[in-house]
Image (cartoon, rainbow, N blue to C red; front, side, top):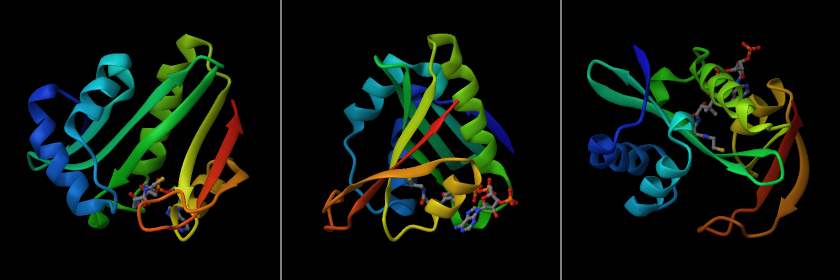
Length: 143
Ligand SMILES: CC(C)(COP(=O)(O)OP(=O)(O)OC[C@H]1O[C@@H](n2cnc3c(N)ncnc32)[C@H](O)[C@@H]1OP(=O)(O)O)[C@@H](O)C(=O)NCCC(=O)NCCS
């Protein structure tokens, strides 16, 4: 298993992976823009030549890292890979003077417990934030 920077040639496979493993619908060009803005923060996890995980984020002007995507194929969850991806993203964001990490998560998601374990706390509620009407929770951590 390898954690590598995301390359543009992997875009179609990434879109299929996200389609299978997340509920939201995403546009290809969004990911090209995210990569262009901060390539070091866009990582994929490969096992047996297939994408089994991905994460990406954006550096905001107010010294914040916003995590945009963090997802692993179900068979690969709870093995410490999510924690490792968050840690790598946070480390490479520090060069930009990032002092806070922020993200949105579905109110019904088990990922809230994962982020709590990593030291993030819920700071806001976003009513009907997701495409299916689910509320979003904003979580943050000072670095
Ligand atoms: C959320 C997600 C990225 C976490 O990655 P992961 O590799 O499974 O998590 P890790 O193995 O690194 O877990 C780190 C810690 O969080 C805990 N944890 C992880 N998922 C958890 C869950 N659903 N409920 C409770 N605790 C959880 C682990 O037990 C571990 O605790 P420990 O350090 O005491 O052993 C992954 O489960 C996933 O892809 N979920 C589906 C997509 C998703 O919800 N993404 C987030 C959208 S914002």
